[in-house]
Length: 418
Image (tube, helix red, strand yellow):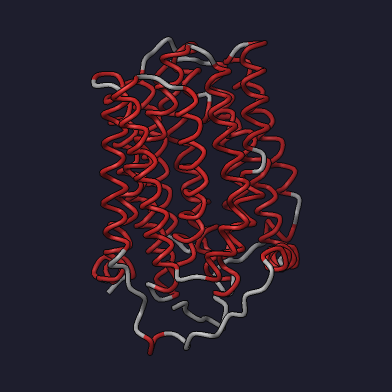
């Protein structure tokens, strides 16, 4: 029986997968609804920038404490808490929008809460999977999870655009509230592997949070290949954040299209991510995880450049689909490598530190993008982003420890949380 067949028949994984699907559809609709809601009312790239910076700062501020909590506490319980808070916050935004209309301050405050708690969910979600499936099943499990989430996210992006365009933002927020509520319920039923399949739990001595964070940083720096991968993600995400966050402006002004086209393009990008994730799970490229990640950046640069040079809906659709494929492939191999190489008791902090390094460029990139778009226009900005992404990927390709990173060797010491 193939790993894919075993994964699909694994009842523990089925609960985890269902939780990811319901959480993903809620997240995708929320993401589209908030951005388009703000832009459609204000017609301002600066207003979109303010919301994006607020979300990014909240995520960066939350990521390191979240990593420590993931290593300290029961991970299933953290999934329940994070999904529950996200549902409650978006539900509140739905009520405010339905009752009072657009309230910019309420959007910012709730977006900050939603973004911060999503960091806790992200680190927990990545860290718990090796406790649900066997090590040799991880590539297939990540492929199925990412592909399924991406496919549903693809449809949900289109749905989010359609809901905002034809029914209003409040209904889109209500939809997300129901999705997060379903994810909260499913989180209750996620179970670990039987005790015979894993080592017994070790007692974790809680220390000062800063000491645990420093330990996480020190461990990652000592793993040169993984560290350079995270560092390269800082640069990749800086440039990609400009392109992805201001896609709403690109569609609205560069293409002269509306919310439905915006949601459709997002859907194609996420669909590509699903294709790439599944391909990674069916190949033997895990031993070349570093190469796959760098090549994703090298290939994506010219594709982003094409968005600026050829502002045609068909070109945009093909480019965004292709970008999704290459980064879906690279992300699956990165995630599986991390789950293989990082010890259980360090996993939450690894994903937190990696998240910090990956997303710390988010707020500056959104500020820079908003200013540049205001000054020189959206199409020249996409041209600059494509060139910069390509050049940065070439620079990191020269780092041997990243280029040769092998993610196929699982750590020998594994423990489970309570």
